[in-house]
Length: 373
Ligand code: FAD
Image (cartoon, rainbow, N blue to C red):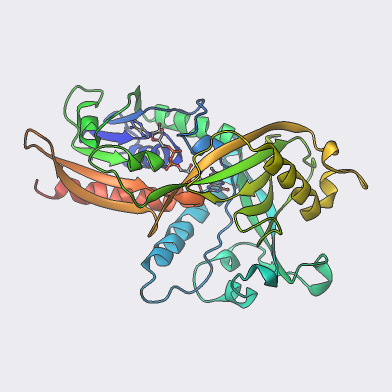
């Protein structure tokens, strides 16, 4: 596959797609250009990937009904991605991915699916290492059920530059540009020739890029605090099904590998574009984290014992109907046909699903290249 490819977007979706494409082509990525407005190292509200926690914590473990294609695809992308994450955590320390124990708590009052569904016959968290339901005497007050599993945490400040360095190693060329229309990307291949395929990995950007303007996309705002309170040995990460502070607020704790700090969250505020942290939400987030794991601070202490590095905000690129991995042939103003493959709309699980969705997108690139224009 030595045709000229332009990958539009340098978040986790674009970088993973470019890397897997470059590796597939016997390690020669010199035909691939990554074009993006933002690159790893940038921090901008339009760029989701630097703001993620990030962990692999599938919440999709229930049997998809016949017409629930969205859930079936989400589970498939997680199933394909998990071994890649496990391999990075065990064999590639420089990628900034580490194994972690995760505990998920459930409260009946959150009206979530019953814990029995955690064991349904489909791909889900129960397929991951060391999965077990918590015994009753392991549940804190107010918690009705829980599970424990071994998963991973990604230090995104290391992982994104690692993806860039891997792409560079395989000859991928990086280029900064802002495209107004998706078809403009066809003229941005570093060879100066037209791209044979554009792979659109622009996340929330696809809401506004001309030629796409996908109205199914919307931001789901997340606010996090990054603190220094991480144990040195075997930190456990936690999440809970709900909070008493309203349906848009959530509570979870992640410990990034390589002293990346402890990430505490959070919220899921739909259609909220606000880029600045809300100070009162920040206090609620910190209080809830201490309730979830009291060992974060010395006994009897409160949020004043959290050593805050920063409060951050990011926008998850949510898409009604699920993420879009599709191909199409588009026509430019001068009547030229252009092949486009989409890989965007990963919501709050863009790392978790990145390998599965990138592999699916690459299959579509291969199909598009052999099909007549
Ligand atoms: P982005 O990272 O947004 O990248 C889009 C790229 O497209 C950028 O390079 C941008 O510059 C480029 N672009 C856009 N428009 C244009 C244009 N017009 N011209 C040129 N370039 C353009 N996921 C998990 O798996 N686990 C987690 O624990 C997790 N936690 C999260 C916590 C928070 C607070 C948030 C906000 C997200 C979290 N996510 C998590 C979700 C994850 O971060 C996203 O799903 C993922 O980063 C999306 O990546 P992307 O590459 O598709 O988009």
